[in-house]
Image 1: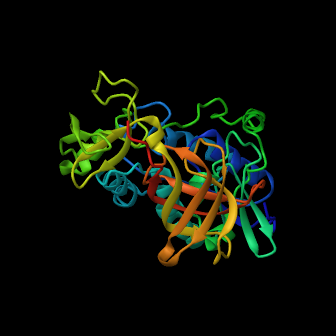
Image 2: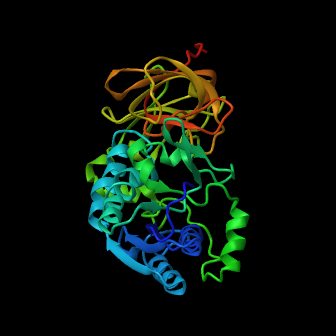
Image 3: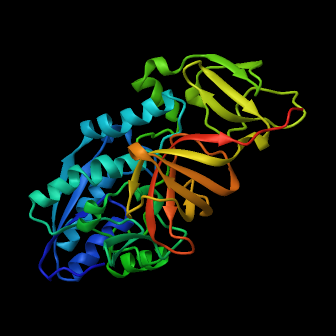
Length: 369
């Protein structure tokens, strides 16, 4: 990361996990005035699931690490703003028939917004996090790049980071592999060195996201029809919030000659559309709310990811008016779901060029049986 003068105050976002703890420890060791900040994002009493974050035990762990490092530590109650800006959006997206990514919204609307403002109020010259991404100074300013450890790379979840925010952010772990981070945590004697990584959605302690959606949007679980590609009813469902594009299990359908998958969700009509696997393939994706990390006015070739766990694939991106963009995939991708993100990367490189939210995916024509 870009070096700041020794003694500069840096706020370290501390979730209570090993990555953010090592981040704070590294900054302290390098001679910075480190202030640890932990966000309480939801009811600590509800956070009983192992692998959750930002409540209960994690706040205690962050405080212990801060004490061992001899740095100031603050816990900020962001529970209401997290509910308003992340959880409410999560529920609304499912009610619209989308498949949301709350981690992106949390980074965009809480961690890199309010927390960044708090860091500035504390007189910090930067905000540091334990994300596995790289911030590299380029000819036109700071650039966002994939992490060295490809298996841990989190650039997909940070596509909404603006260039202005990137100037203030630091990611000390981006050039390290996870095993190095674990080893360093042990070497530094951090109490969380062997702590498991956080998994799944932090505010869904039982893993049943539909319970959260029904609680926040009681009218979202409207029953309706399951229909085939021709609009013929083939079954019933208890609400589109229980389904996502690409889903095969839990449809309650049997007797088909070949497996059927959810290919689309029509929340307005409370319809779940199913079809064969080939109906999931698409080459054309429309995006909304595109965040550009480069200057882009004309179509360009790049690689894109349409799901966090998929490898980048070749594509051409065309910027459009109103923050939109059209993505033409060189080869068809399956299960491209509205509400997920499509992130642009330099072809055969690590540079993150931008990304947007998937508004619509045009399915390839499927020949009638």
